[in-house]
Image (tube, rainbow, N blue to C red):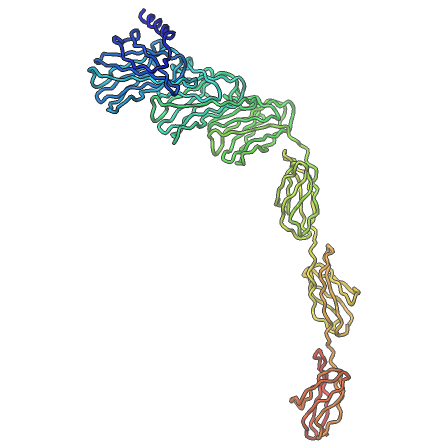
Length: 640
């Protein structure tokens, strides 16, 4: 009966007491030792829009309990403050209108001046009670000051929300606030009308690690994560997943470090997407349906997370699976049918985080499962994309390749649009390039020797390979000018070196009179008639591509000695030796091995060389040498 009276009084209080526009000091009114006799408090509005109520009271003895009642016409955050005493600890408790205890905390021994927050809490509108009691230390007539600060807000938790049946309903894409304990979980409920991607953010805290759980409508756990100690209180993503339409719950507690009345904030971000995985899809029986030729997205939450997809193949089909390849994660992908007559396991390589061709699948009509899980590397909330398409089995057309010379540094041509063009030299693929949307391709190459065979083929996105195009590098570099060995007026061959296997041409005047082919070492030899000394012979080479070298010329050297000179009579009185020889020839006169003198014949071959007078019967030898230093035989005369 007493409790019924208290509830009726509280209901009357809701309608008769509201926020005040003027701050009022209050004092407890004894006997306020029960809910039914609680001192009524009024919250006064501050200039900053918050509300405050301050009351002074006295704990008369260890059995004295002081109760206060106040009303909140709107939801918001309540901060309960009390001054501290050197010799006394107080117990401060918060109750709802049903007299159910929501919070219970104790003050510390302290001589600091002023009031200090004992606890904070988010509350719904309604009537509440505060009790101040003796807890420890001195209990004889201990004065205290109780202060309530209230901020109206729709984004604070509303106690009592300690189980799913009392969960606070929250909106999506909105930041909410609460106070966590290790023993008193906070539950929140939210509804998703469409399938989509869910990202749940929770702040970090330098003093506390939080635990957050995502639950299904019937309370089954989908995800559990723990925050780390942080240097700030910023929101950070803790859960990333996909959900089907329905009701879900969040459960938040303080896990480690400071565990009592720790403030937190969180946000449930939602983006509608019919093609995002829908948890719980961790088994065949919960596999998500996957349509062909449709891009799906999902998240591998941890190393033991398995995402199952079910696909119906209506007929025998050539399929290709495309998959994201992260730079720091490798996936295990298992594809199988219900009878396991087809069962294959594949492992992805590290990539560049883009969607790319993963594997070709040739499947018979039937139902298949695709199971994606973590294999290696990073395993914390790794997003992925996948797409199963009907594979193109038609190879691209053979690429067309523009001419390539030994001076080319670019290979270009046309191939199937967006295909990958491969350049192969010998047995090795040395370059790849992607044809643009118009089918044009071009990529840089090294310079190749003339005659080198280049093989070009294309592959489309399904891995089909075209026939190859083979081209030979065209030789556009002329051979070096031939080198010519000495040719004399007695030579019947002209020899030398030129580019290996080139054709060497001999030209006299303006007329080509002979040619021959250099061997594999570049040596050549051409039979010739004897040419007069001074004749100019010109040679050049042509390679198999028709490139012509520069010309090399040589003059036929004089290798024929002059006839022995004609010498006139020489007497003991002669001071000159005279005679006739080849024009401009050089004359040498010797006596034994001794050269007496030298001279030069004039343009008509006459010569006159001064000597000293010689004794009778002295033997003189006269020689003639031409411009090529060919020396005649000796003409012998005796001094008369």
